[in-house]
Length: 244
Ligand code: PEP
Image 1 (cartoon, rainbow, N blue to C red):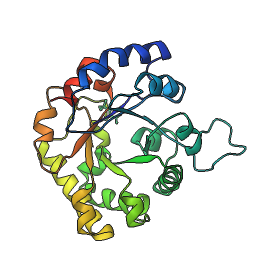
Image 2 (image 1 turned 30 degrees about the vertical axis):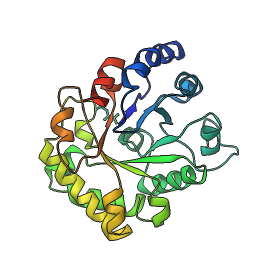
Image 3 (image 1 turned 90 degrees about the horizontal axis):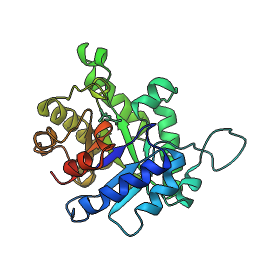
Image 4 (image 1 turned 180 degrees about the vertical axis):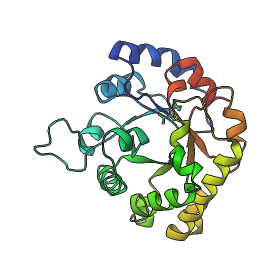
């Protein structure tokens, strides 16, 4: 159960969130919990979750270890502040910051080199769904962004299926739509990495997940977890998703 805080919350707001959130999810044994705050909040978040069952992730990383790349942050730097996870290829990165399947793969490899666990986001835009291109888009994103990993590398990642038209819009994919997309992705996992990998990998659904729709989404056997944006900003709301 992962939360993406996007560009929200200051350090004091981050600390206040975890004071409330940690005890609410302390008994959650059925899942791993990860929250991805902004870069400047990572240290405070790691400190505020020390000794708890909540892991911290970043929202992006650059693929070089260090160098003259003003404004960028490496996997090694994220690891050194205590991150365990990192989102890669979020649709907002693809849409506003020129992320491509090729740069997704570079970032994933850099994350793995730094011993971080990438959550790789893929999903179709509205016009692609309406044009009947959902499967083709997912196959393309999978092939170029994920397909180049080794079986061992693949075992370290999680995939988030996030239909772009459902992110931050209040529109959720129907459970059947989510399950269909997850089946397409899982079949790609089987073809590229084998049956065992396809059964053990975790595919998360993301797109306007809220406390009132978590139950029906997670009831789909294909949906292994969720990546939550807006509803992860409130401690009670995200805790009720985690503890559904
Ligand atoms: C996200 O940012 O990955 C996301 C799914 O956002 P929201 O839950 O707000 O749609």
